[in-house]
Length: 293
Ligand code: NAP
Image (cartoon, rainbow, N blue to C red):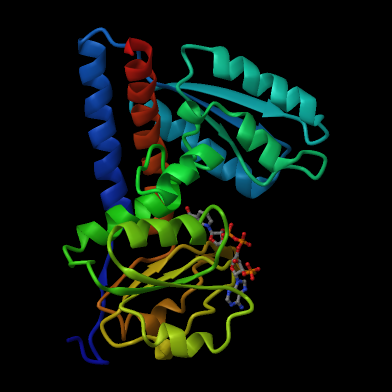
């Protein structure tokens, strides 16, 4: 058991993500040597939200670094929904494109659910399509949401046994909290999912062996709330007034209480992109097996 003065070990998301990207690069090279097509990822960005632009640039750059094909589409902020849906239809039919990612959030005139549902589930590398989420609910995962799936790899890299651990997830969004709960349940954790209406969050967090915070509020989770020795995954990415990034967990106090913790930046963020590429490879394989059936 870790005492209160212990400094947590860092879960180095940057290094683990680099390892995943390398695994993808090797698999792509092997496919190439076998004469199989290079996996292709299409990244679609609507509008000019500066945060989205940074994420999209990173995704495109990392895709190319693995030897995969990268297809880029930048649509104006006032783009009508039907134009985006027509592009998705085109990408669904394009055999060179194995994965389609539409950067969220989308402008108000576009219904994100309709867009997500239009993507062929076999090309849904974000893992947000109801088909892929449904498969995860049923413990038959296909393409899995990148951030939670990446978090599971980070947890496994600690070498800690997850079975039977109590995981408290703060946030219940479709892209972070909910799929995270499903992943942890599938790993045989006992889960508690919290949100903005949860009573006495500090008390619940104090019972957790694993805490996953995906709220979007800088340094919201205080170190003093944590059970000594807890594993902390901080999904939050918040930009402070001085331009620096911080997570949803107060790293300074939490790292004196936790046994393992992810930093921000350099924790969950890089893993999300690496997992996206692993998903694109998986999508290419899935499409090939379906063609052979
Ligand atoms: P979101 O859709 O706004 O969801 C936030 C969740 O936090 C909601 O479920 C909300 O509860 C809950 N919440 C808000 N205030 C709370 C409070 N005071 N106590 C308890 N729960 C509270 O956000 P998101 O898209 O999931 O993103 C969350 C954070 O993760 C953001 O900082 C985002 O930038 C980051 N993120 C990072 C990555 C990555 O790769 N590292 C990927 C995705 C997102 P209600 O449901 O009750 O409103």
